[in-house]
Image (cartoon, rainbow, N blue to C red):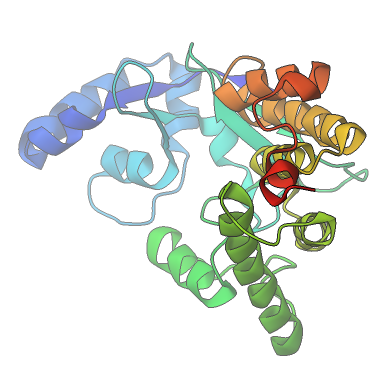
Length: 264
């Protein structure tokens, strides 16, 4: 799905002008919208209170750095509920279109969800953020795990971060196929389907550094597929690099880098 912004506000406008100066202009911008669009915009819920348009923007906008730091409001997207393990990934393209794509099979009647916050944070931190920023306590399946299972999930997230640090460092010692497979399993167990591009890129590079051509190709292909969903066809350098790695693993600078360092 693709949606254009109803309102687009530069960060400088919000931060450099005092509320008494920018609020009348925000009201004028909202009032100038076509009636149906204006009604849709004003029907969005705010959390912080005070000036209505400012509250709507603060609660529901998405940040984009296209031609400067802007806040874009997309009323249709703001109606997507939050899930710490959402079934939809999104990005904002260079034309400011908000693009959403499902990242796993969605059952009939299943709600489409996005993540409002850092899904890699531990459960307690995620819930505190949800209450503080949006006024709700997250009740998604991941946050509703038992205490024991929730602690296991938090430990997996910690291990993902630790292994990422090891695997991203070309100087790391002791990296082998078992470690790479463990990294893949952790991501799958945590159901982080909406943010797999970076993970598959790390995995593809490490298989290539270990001299495993077919595994490198496999995960480079997965990285491209995920990257196009998360960033667009040409939205990230990693997507282009992974296309090259899939075509010519042995030409890539990473080829056998870990193997040759050990003299194997």
